Length: 143
Image (cartoon, rainbow, N blue to C red; front, side, top):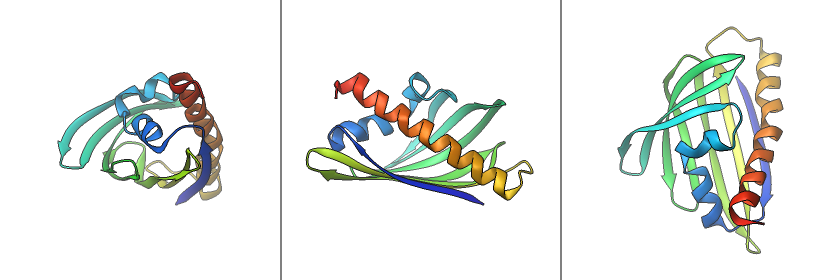
């Protein structure tokens, strides 16, 4: 297993940031490794989302996203060809008009990837992803 966690302060309201992280079908517009995202099924506050990502080659996987509006989005792996396990969450807290966002992911790859390399893959991608979210906030809200 490889896990990673970060806490970031985003220059937007919790509602604004929640709109970005819950708009799965627009991820490909600002997350470079995401080729496409499709919501396949909605079941109450849960959505089954299919991701197509490019990490050396294209991979597909499906996550059940559980949404707690303007507070938390958590996920668990439903199926896919990249991960055996992919669980995680975004947790959002208002802080002086900004959003303190905690991101956590715990992943185990389907392919044989030695532990230290898996951890490096998960951790190296994290700063790039966080930077992409900061750019998206600035692009959408000018902040």
